[in-house]
Amino acid sequence: MVMSEEEKWVEVCNVKSLKNGEMLDFDQGSKKILVAKVGGNVYATDRICTHAYADLSTGIMNEEENTVTCPLHLSAFKLDTGSPQNLPAEEPIKTYKVKIQDNSIYIKLD
Image (tube, rainbow, N blue to C red; front, side):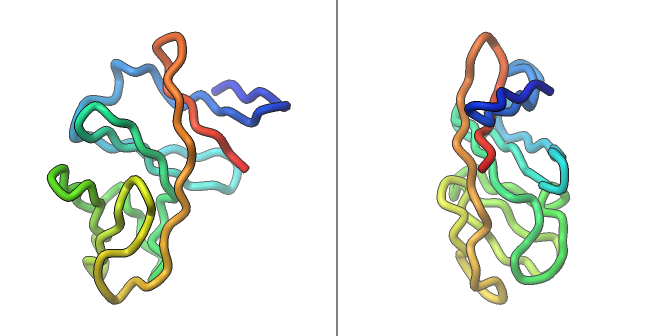
C-alpha cells in the first residue's frame, strides 16, 4: 500500500484482482473499508454497518440495486452514496473517492 502524504490516495489493489460482483475488505490504520466492483465501476465505503457493529464485507452484494446488505440485521446500503435503503439502519455509511491509475485501484482518505 502506498500513500501520498499530500493527496492521501491509498493504493488498495491491482485492478485485475477485483472482478465484477466481488468485494474486498481493506484496513488502513483504524479505518475498515469495503471495496466493491459493480458493472465496471469501483466503489469504496466504510466496512462497518452504522446500525450495529457488523462487517459488510461478509454481507451480500446486490449488483442490480448497487447495494451491500449487512449480514447481521439485513439493512442494505447504496455503494455509490452510502445511504441506507431499509431499517434498522438509519445512518449512511461513509463513501470514498476512487481512482484507477497504472492498473491499480486507489481510494482517497480524509
